[in-house]
Structure formats: C-alpha cells, structure tokens
Image 1 (cartoon, rainbow, N blue to C red):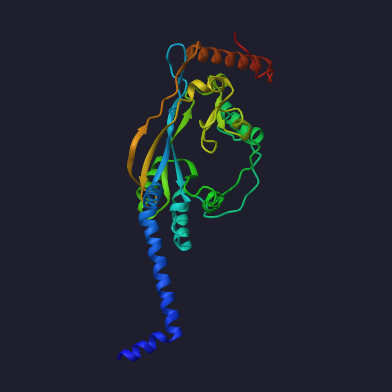
Image 2 (cartoon, rainbow, N blue to C red; image 1 turned 180 degrees about the horizontal axis):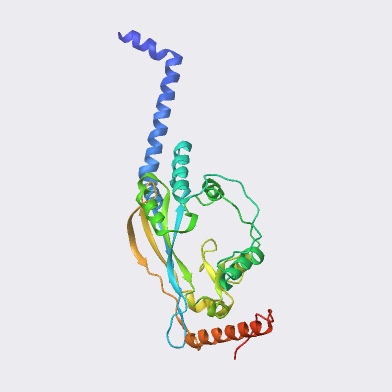
Length: 323
C-alpha cells in the first residue's frame, strides 16, 4: 500500500473513530490491571487469601458432674452431624441436585418437602416415659414454641443460602457413625458437604438423678439478652436448663477455641494456618449426693408403692418421697 493510500485511510473519520475506541478500551484494560496488580495489589491478595481461609470454632468439652464418691453421673459422647456450606455447592443447578439426591439416599431424607404440622403425641419408650424425654418434649413444644418442619435438604439450604453462604448449616444431627464415615468417604463427589463431630450430653445415671441434674436445651431469643456476648452460638449450642446443669452453667460450659483453616474450592480442609487457640474444658462439679444410696432408696420406695397397691387390690398411689 502506498503512502498516499495510508494517508487516505487515516483521514477516513470512521477509521479514526474505531482507532480511538480501540485505544480507549486498551487503555481501560491497562489502567484496570495497574489498579488490581499494583495500586491495590496487596488488598486483593489479602482478599483472595481470606476467601480460602475459614475461622472455625472449637467447642469446649462440657464439665462432668460426679457424685460425692467420684462416680460420673453424665459424660460427653460423640454425635455426628452432616453439614452443608452453601457457597461450596456446585454452580450448576443440575450438579447441585445430584449432590442433594445422593445425600438424601445416604441420610434417608427427602431432597425437598413441604412443612407439616407437629405431632402432639408424647414420645413413648418401653413402659413409662423417661423424665429426660418428657422434659425435652415440653421444652420443644411449649417453652420454645417451635413448629416441627419435615424439611428436605434443599429447604434447609435455601433458608441460609443468601444470608450466610459460607457458614455451615446442619442438615441432620445424631447421624450413626457408619453413615457419617460413608459420607466422609464420598466427600470428593459431594462438594460443600462435610461431617462434623459434635459433643452430646449423655445422662448415664438415668432417671435416678434426672430431676437433680436437669438437662440441656436450645438457646431461645429471650436467652440471648441475658447470656454473655460472643460466648454462645445460638444455632448450635445448648445451655443448661434447671437442676445442676442450669445452676452451674457458667462453671460447666468451658471456653471455646478457634483456628484458621485453609480450604479448597469445595470446602475440604487443606491445612491449619497460624496458631490455634485451644478450647478450655469446663470445670467438673462434685455433688454431695451418693449415687449408690440414691439407687437403693429409689428402689425401696418403688417396692413400697408396689406393695401398697397390691395390698389394696387397686392403684392407691404411684407417688412417694424418701428422706
């Protein structure tokens, strides 16, 4: 092409406009790269690191309650929960549904369901209702006034998906160890799904001391106004309700720890970063109660009640007191 032809091309207004637009676009890209990599490079590097780091709370083992002779009346046992981090679920709706379907098969749950009315039947075991079962029923149905929902996996995730996408939500608690291990083995094909080993309170002394020890219950909105700040997680923690569990809540609860964990894009733990703050177990409580004497006294009282009813030929009473 001759020099005159080139000059004529550049004199064309349309070509000049296109060149100006191209240079402007290129200039915008250059400025943006300079801003991201140089001007605010440190900020975006920190942000990228923080996106892969998650602060995890380490639960503190609750203190044990003993009788006067050092016999444990309660202990903390493992309780497995299956959780989902919504942000780590697949972006594709189809892939996400496959994760939900596989999890539903493993946990014997529904993928999606509608709310149903709560049953008003008392939880019956073999024979009489245990004191602990009765207490839990009354707390769940009356004190907390919660509606029992037959929720599917998707229903649970959708409740927190837009509010706390990076916070794990419990899909099912009290999962058998075998099922929990099966879910953990399939973690590579279940992005966003994790197994959490929680601590569950087990009252090994049964109904002998149930009225004395009390029990643990969910945290209500009314409790939050009276509880110390930044100590409890209202979605997962339990507090002592009545009895020794309630009276010595401050002593038994312990102090939570914290650690920073680096995770991959599907939420699997890669490594622990920085220094871990260990949890401080709760203090134990020793009672003046003699557990063996308590059992003998309760059996003697029950035998006397049975004798009186048999002697009268009908039920005279089922209540009594021993001093």
